[in-house]
Image 1 (cartoon, rainbow, N blue to C red):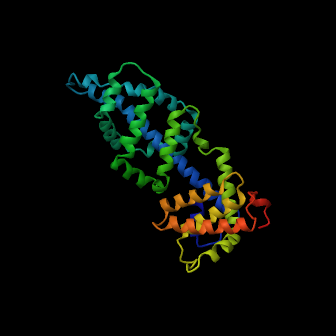
Image 2 (tube, one colour):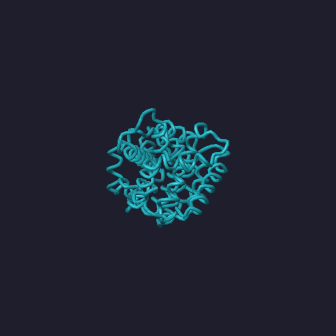
Image 3 (cartoon, rainbow, N blue to C red):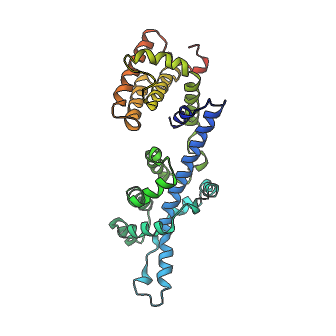
Length: 299
């Protein structure tokens, strides 16, 4: 969707292969953002050691200064992530450490150590996988995602944060479940990547045909005045109906209704639903929905 929006927004004709390049760039941007989120999360945890060192080096350290608990710095999940070679490569590729604000890390750490969940975590001398994972879930959800200072920082550094935030949250949940096997260089699996490239190609190749199906259903609507994103979503939906054999038509229509509600105007969900449902019924009566690959289609 983002790629097609970028292509449609260009004031020039795209070169062959350019939409795919834009898609890959968008995926690289997502990789950079996710690498930053993971790196930041680890830095907050590792700050406990820096805090302990700074306080111990005071001219007259207090008893509390000498008792800073650094359990989280030895978190087993933390070191599993640190040893993930694809994470190391991604951090180096994007120079992630230069994107992190040390003062914001310090403030995030101070918020963390005041949470009752953190105090409970460090009070338990033993380690178990559940608690080791849970404390990072808390850092991500409460110290990062619910922290206005952090969100302002992310929005400033990553212009697509608003579009990617929900995906990042889902991705982090998946990542924390199996960090050792997560591949930062291939965040989108081969099957999903194939689907994305096939859908992108079908929408760009079949643009005129899709418009031919859509315009008669607009009635009193001027196709030139319809929200660009709504038109893109309808074209994507039409292509899924026609050319993707494994996706049920009901799933396709519901998916694009949800996307329209989330990313476009308040009325877009109803509008996209009406147009796609109308086209779906017409294609069924014409026996044109066979779920064949668009490359083999004569439509």
